[in-house]
Amino acid sequence: MKLPRGTFDVLPGTVERWQYIENQLREISKRYNYKEIRTPIFEETELFKRGVGETTDIVQKEMFMLEKRGKEQFTLRPEGTAAVVRSFVTNKLYGAANQPVKLFYIGPMFRYERPQAGRFRQLHQYGVEALGSEEPAIDAEVISLAMSIYRSFGLKKLKLVINSLGDSESRAAHREALVNHFKPVAHELCQDCQNRLEVNPLRVLDCKVDRNHPSMATAPSILDFLNPASKEYFDQVLLHLDALGIEYVIDPTLVRGLDYYNHTSFEIMSEAEGFGAITTLCGGGRYNGLVEQIGGPATPGIGFGIGIERLLMALENEGVLPEIDDAIDVFIVAQGNDEVEKTATRLLQLMRLEGLAADRDYLGRKFKGQFKAADRLKARFTVILGDEEVERGAAALKDMSTGEQIDVPLSAVADTIVAKLKEEVQ
Image 1: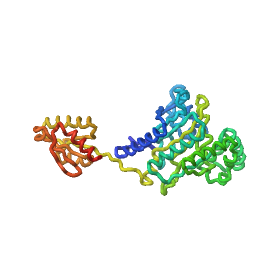
Image 2: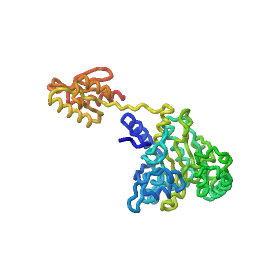
Image 3: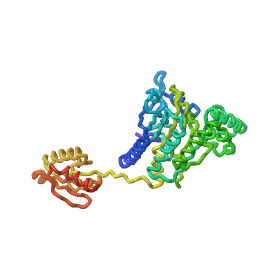
Image 4: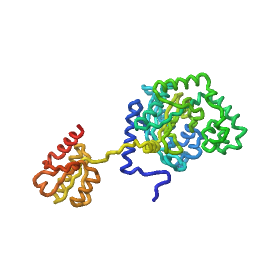
């Protein structure tokens, strides 16, 4: 049996890095008062068509749709926002006492695309959604949270790119200008862009195939079509970012790949040398109107998504991925009669109940082989049990870093190790 293309196993020795990242993400989310939400891995297909947008590459090309049963059709979630907003509506969180509702999620997403460095068919994503506020300050907070995450891991070579897509009035005016601009050269663009020009011309600017076409460089800027209200909103977001000391670059071509964005749109990129051609680490923006599309009351929202795989790549690239300590506290080295075996079993359980990370040999190895196993596991201490030790009710406790060995009553082994470990911390 083969591993499915575009997926990977996270094995012991590597999974600890994932746990480190997930723990850090949860800790920072708590500081910003975002609460965890967990949604199903699959949802009704219509949710993503309506929420993500039927003209997006995700819906048209990349969704993993499950086998249809009767009239129902389900899809493995390709992104997190639509599912979180669906849950927000389903569970009537818009009526919660604490507003805005600030949520975060961590979990797998699924996209049928060509696997490449940092991009997989099963990917893992952390994201936040703040629902219920249309204050520019919450936009800045969400961006600040994303930047704080990367900084907390020690990343330094980052660039924040930001844009405004404006409100519906601004977008309509920009849409008309885009159509007029691209129509004369439409026959030179890819088939996808020709289709987008009819249904969602803004997404032409996001095309990877035609990004070097001369018409892209001269396309009308959304910033020239912002009405006064949209311009004021964008200015206020930038004002708050300035107050937070967050540097940014305004890029009028940044549109993001999903249909639900309006007003603030942003990406965080790696500028580290050798990171690769795809530099985007995080993307997000405001999506006023999405809640209504999914059947809820008018509710503004903003959020972002961070790819865990790409975060790991960035940490490795900048050399700031910490060494994970996976050593155990104690290993029992035991050899002898049945009473020795029973004593080792009882002592192992007692040490684990005392909070120690402990293990023993289960392969019937001799003393020498068991000590080698203790070394491989980087055991801080070994407890040595033989017929003689058990008969006199004691064990030999060996400090594996110094080689010092002392006799300890069996009843005091766990307490002695706990005390020694505490002394080392102090």
